[in-house]
Each structure stands twice: as C-alpha cells, then as structure tokens.
Length: 134
Length: 134
Length: 134
Length: 134
Image (cartoon, rainbow over all chains, first blue to last red; front, side):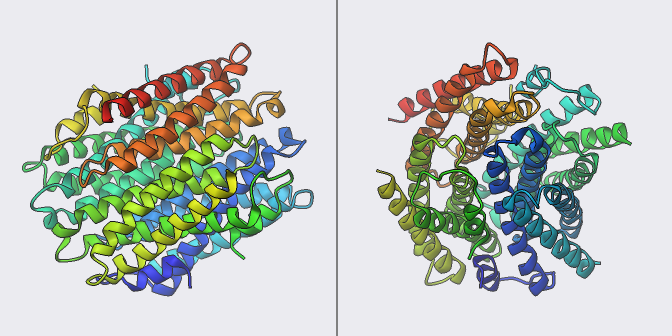
C-alpha cells in the first residue's frame, strides 16, 4: 500500500470521492511526476539532446502539473469539486502531450519509453477519476 | 519591470503568446502564489483558526496551482497551447474559489482581504490570457 | 520497484552516488512529502485544530523541502555534490522537526503517528546518503 | 512593495526574524526561482544546447530550492529556526553554483547573464539573513 493510500485511511472526516480511484490517481500522479523529472534529466545527458528539447519541456510541464494535482487531490478538508475537476483536466492534457512526445523517442531511448508509459497510465486514471466525479 | 518580464525579453526564440498579457499573467500568478502561502500561514495564527480551515485549504490549492502555472507559462520552447489553456482554466477556477472563500473573512482579517484581492486579479489576468489565446 | 528507481536504471550516463542508497532516499522523500501534505490536511479536519497549528506548519515545510530534494536528487546531469549535500542536510532537519512535532500528537491522531514514522524514516535515509557521499 | 512584503505586514502574530531582511530574502528567492525557470527554458532554445546542459540542470535545481525556501520563509506560525537556517544554507549553495555556471555563458547568452546576476543577489541576501539569524 502506498503512503498516500495509507494516509488517506487516517483522514478523520468524510472523503467526497471514490477512494479507490482517488488513491490510484494519487499514486499515478506521483509516479508520473517522478518519471517526468527523471526523463527530462536523462534527455539532457543524451548526445542528441538538441532533438529532445521539446521532450524536456513537456517533461518539465508534466512534473509540475502532476505534482500540483497530487497535492490538491490529497486534500479533503473544504473539498471543492471545481478545482479538482479543472486540475484533473489540465493533468490529463499535460500527460497526453508528454506521452505523445516521449513516444516519438521511445524506440531510441528507454527513459522516454518508460516515461511515455507512466504518462499514459496517469492520463487514464485522471480520466477515470473525472468520470467518477461527474 | 519584474524578473519574469526581463527574462522573457532574453528568450532567443519566438513566443507564441501576447507578451504583455503573458508577462501580466506571470506576475499575477507569482503574486497570487505568494499571497496564498502567506494567507494560509496567517490563518493558522488566528485564535479562530477552526473557522478558517476551508480558507487554509483553498489557499494551499491556490499556491500550488498558481506556482505550477507560473512555471509552465514561462516556458516557450516546444510550446503547447493545449497545456497552457487547460492550466489557465484550472488557475482561474482555483483563484476564484480562493477569492470567494477569502472574501468571506475579509472584514475580519486583513490577510484574507488582501489575498482575496490578489486572487481576484489573478483570475482576471488568467481569463484575459485565455481570451488572447483563443 | 518504484518509478524513481526504474527511471534511474534508464539514465544514459554515470551516476555519482551509491544507487541503492539514492533510490532509497528518493522513495523516502516522495513518501514523506505525500504524508506531510496529507497530515497537514488531516490536522485541519480535527476539531482540536487550534492545538495542531505547529504540526500543520512543520508538515507544510516538510512537504516543500522533501519535494525539492526528491527532484534535485533525481537529476544526475551536471551533478554537483555541494547542492545535494546541503539539501540533504535541510531535509534531515525538516524531517526531524516534523517527526518531533507529529510524535507529540501520535497517541491521539493516527495521521500524526504515521506521518512521524515516515518523517523519521526519511531523516534516517537522508543521513545515510549524506554519509555515503562523504 | 511586493506582495510577499504586503502580506507579511498582515501577519497577526510575532515574526521572529528581521522583517526587512526577511522581505528582501523572499523577494530575491521568488525572483531567482523565476529567472532560473526562464533561463533553463531559454537554454533549451539555443542551437548550442548541448553545451548548456549543466546550466539547465543548475537552473532547475535553483528554481526548486528557491521556491521551497520562499514558501518556508513566508511561514511564521510555529517558527523553527533550524529549518530556516538549513534551507538558507542550501539556497545559498544552489544559487552560488547556478551563478557560477551561468556566468560561464554570460558573454554569449543574455539570459545566462541576467540569471547569474539574480542568483548572485539571491545568494547574498540568503547569507545576510543567515547572519541576522545567528
């Protein structure tokens, strides 16, 4: 069980979202943020970095958006569905763009292949949680 | 001139957004993130903190979303309008919710009054920039 | 295997740190950041929140410092031991202070008990990695 | 007057640091984080990006460390001098390393020149505040 999930179980109030989907989203967002940060750094070490600058950029965006979303989604006090909904949308978009870009380099760079996979999974669980909120 | 604006002038490539509105958005996002972080902390010092917990929460969300947006919007390499657009929407929503909540306490707490003002201004410039991108 | 560890294996260059300790630190920092964010939010939902404001504050600090450190430590390009070293020190201090504060409430609040545990473990692995760097 | 400074004036409790130096540090940290994020992005747009990867990396570190420090230093509730002190040290180190690296490219790239200047100033005010805390 992830730390985020274990902490969720200790929340003293009610949680206004499907707990299983919420925990899945939290874990996926954290994993995606980590993989984006690492992929950006790995791209910087490739001799062909000049062809990877858009990948670095979408990685950096992905890391920032996913990190913010992971924080917001792990808050339940004074819950506001509007913020969560809009941020999940931004996350799904950022993850999709980053996955698309990483996939273009996946056959050459294992870090891009793995990061694309993590972003795609994060996009999927964000969309799942959005549906569960509707 | 803010640091963000001065740095924007040194960007070696093209910038695909209205520079004046973009710089205004960047400055407003940075100011909003700072004011949300400070308001959350000030609320924690109020004897009536129990009545301010929703305010602390929307402050924390506001700080996280605005900070992520300020970063994303100050990147121009490999620009992707979809990410900026979705994130501006999330920011405008987060700022509106935080402004609404802070306004409820504005007559009692100067930090809430000032933070509401900063959030409202940030919501406005995010909406402006969204329109300029359409 | 955590995402951070899997991504580390794909890094195309050399890594100037003990990989096992580094991966452990990365995972502990991410877990600590998540548990601090969640504990701050859980404290806000407690009826006795007024007695937990210092805990909220050290939680927020812990989340911010651990998140920054997790990012810095997962970068290997242009590695600079001075930054890693100073940031690990700041992390160990922030985790210690947060663990100390959470422990004071551990018998009453399960979220504080669990967060104290996560912070203490993070402090330990940060110190381990510092030693491995000496 | 910056937003951070204006908000500081509304804090309902005591502030255990020299307010002028603290406000200067907050402003410098925010400016430094913004300039590091922008310099990293500008470097990615340079045709000679391959020679700038260490600069991108120290920029990213500088942005993360300064942002975390700006947040921690704008919290006064449950103030803990140990965390502030260790984080100021980490910041001063990260700013120094980033300034050193940016300076190496300052004659060729205006964004590096400006970022070096901002980092150097931030290092200076972090050291000033450290002294004021001793």
